[in-house]
Image 1 (cartoon, rainbow, N blue to C red):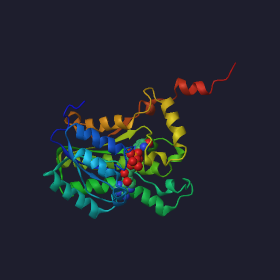
Image 2: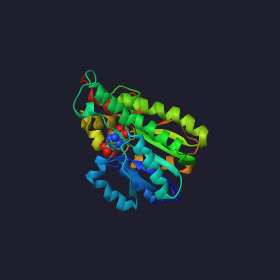
Image 3: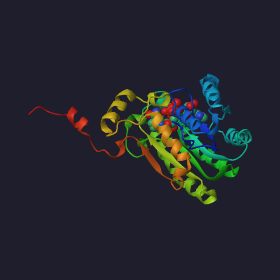
Image 4: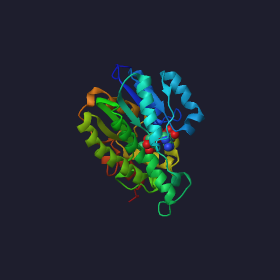
Length: 272
Ligand code: NAI
């Protein structure tokens, strides 16, 4: 049910690849809540074509941008302001990719060129995006920028590999740039730390299906869905969360603060 929470708000949504993508769900919800936005993804992802369907469904234009290219990002932000007829109120950064994960390299034996790529695509791209928006003065006062992250930034999940380091950097950039953007024009910058979710990026991680079941058993509310994450993003883009900034916000059904659950203990029960 729409409440028009984002009526009049304009933004950019990165990272909708297919209808499993968290960004896809965010675009659907934001549209439902009255927002207007530009959709973007890497040129190669746009060529895959599924995003055209989302653009049609939400009445949005598509602007390609490789999030590791400053030129592409400047162009994206300038074009978006042209298309939307003014400055932006929100940006969703929903980007992650590790060549080491993709190609099955262990954390202890990475290809370091790929390690750099992981950091550039999955974390420094947020710095580049924030910087482009900052320099072009593209954000309205009290705007909101959200990036998606995972708890492997704080705790060890061995098969998350170099993405764990990328997420730690992403969360650090959120705090440090959040300070600068808050001072500049009251723009808030936060990360949302989402439960494991069956998407293209998620299912690339080794043992992901088992891990989803483990997280489910460890979360008092169960794993948070992609749709639930979209609701949270929409609330973060709205005026109801104006003073929340520089935070890492767990959206994980309670996983992050559960030491152990009865469900998990049950699995280790020994007959006496
Ligand atoms: P997804 O695979 O649907 O989205 C990842 C997106 O990153 C894709 O659209 C891809 O085209 C884009 N991308 C990759 N390289 C790019 C580049 N150079 N420039 C621009 N875009 C690029 O998967 P998902 O799960 O929706 O991922 C979205 C975000 O959520 C990522 O940051 C991911 O790490 C995060 N996340 C995902 C979780 C999961 O279990 N699926 C859990 C917690 C966080």
